[in-house]
Image (cartoon, rainbow, N blue to C red; front, top):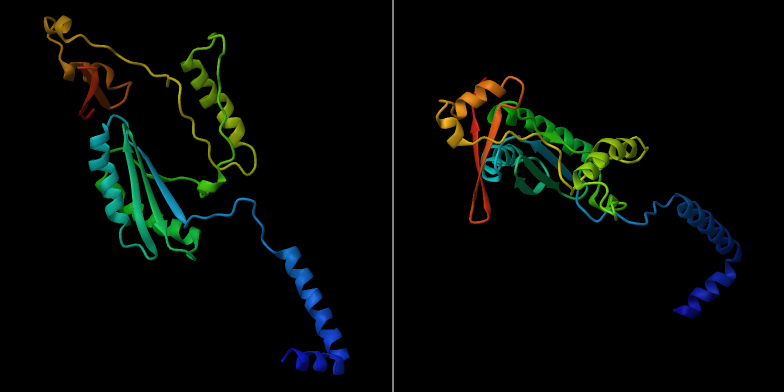
Length: 237
């Protein structure tokens, strides 16, 4: 067999040369146009839905926010599975689609279903889709420290959230920056039930006083046996 191929190549020298030149040009063109990625995307197309639910405990976030979003997303064409994570005031739902599906078409279908989910969610809670970036696109982790302790963890978090993060997002190609750690700056009103019992002021009274200028959701946190217990209350303004 091999001898026959060699004899045929020697008899058809011109054809062999022409075919070799054509293959050389095709290979060169493919080499320059071949998509090459240092970190190839090994994940299926994923659409992430993030919902901020201020004032809701993790259990309430799971029942009132995460589960309704999962229910409306079920049944989408090409949907493989749905994963979710619920925390105190935050809900993340990951819709994973099949290989070969168009990511922008998937995002359009998810956006249409989210319009239906708004009717089932609590008041003033709106789910949003995060930028379309792969988990393999994580470039680096940056940490802010104060070796001598001159800057408090709260100030470090404030600098990272309001100074560094907006500047990094202004760089072309940066789609998302997540700030974690430190102490999140917040204003807390500490109420003593015993001191206010004689004044006739209850929880509803505090909501009436501060509700016009503050959030509509109040968290009452009880400390028992070293554990924090969330007790969330909602009143209409």
